[in-house]
Length: 168
Image 1 (spheres, rainbow, N blue to C red):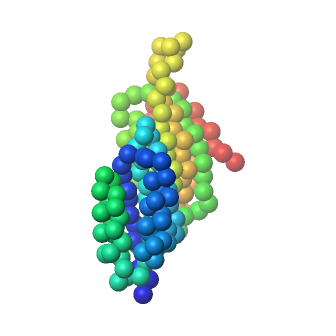
Image 2 (cartoon, rainbow, N blue to C red):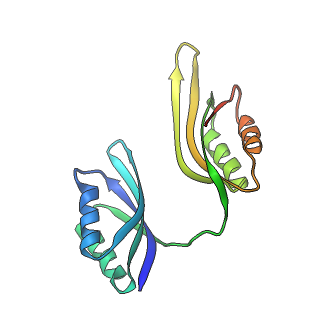
């Protein structure tokens, strides 16, 4: 019987590492149904939804951990969500930076039960303005009961001079 689980892998990125992880998975009879990889300064985090025969799952986990001992593996059960989301929404938020801005933005998204598919946040010193500017690129899925207008009004309250561009 096929079983699905989520694995998160953390560590230092080496050449062909992801291909090697995939090869071991395939050799053990597993397939990655979906995956996301984030790379930053020589480090990476990868999340995969893995499907494998239930009786081979433990052997796969042991093989990965033994062959890639320098990496950290975290496992979670796959749970299909019953929440219905509207279509995808992409936006860029720019504003004056302040302490706690990312935390407050994520609190708004969490309170509205918005699914975050992708999030990149940057802080850039603008010497001509004498300020640090905050920029966030987001790919979101709104629950059916949350309008774009509600989301934008909540996000505009985050800081001074908030500018939000919604990708059409």
